[in-house]
Length: 79
Image 1 (spheres, one colour):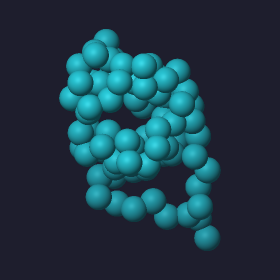
Image 2 (tube, rainbow, N blue to C red; image 1 turned 45 degrees about the horizontal axis):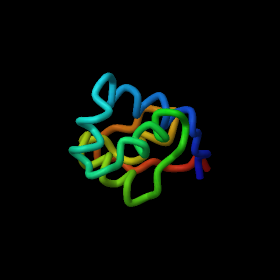
Image 3 (tube, rainbow, N blue to C red; image 1 turned 180 degrees about the vertical axis):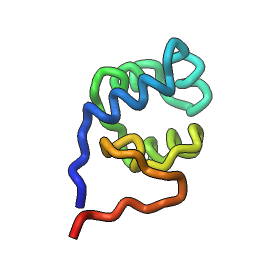
Image 4 (cartoon, one colour; image 1 turned 90 degrees about the vertical axis):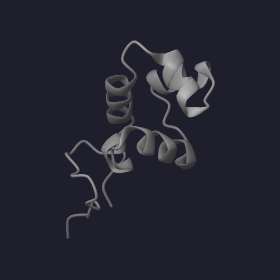
């Protein structure tokens, strides 16, 4: 199984949120402080990550792995 890199999540969530953390928080039903925590390196719980992935149209793996993950393609560990 590939390693999850919190820095990848932080970089990717910053790409998504950009300068609109209030709107992002509102759209997903999150507190603004939670969004700031994610922007500063905290990885959300699986249920929140799932909501973020659905909202953005990106697979959950895209937020966690430092590799391009095509939409709809599961990530496979190297044998």
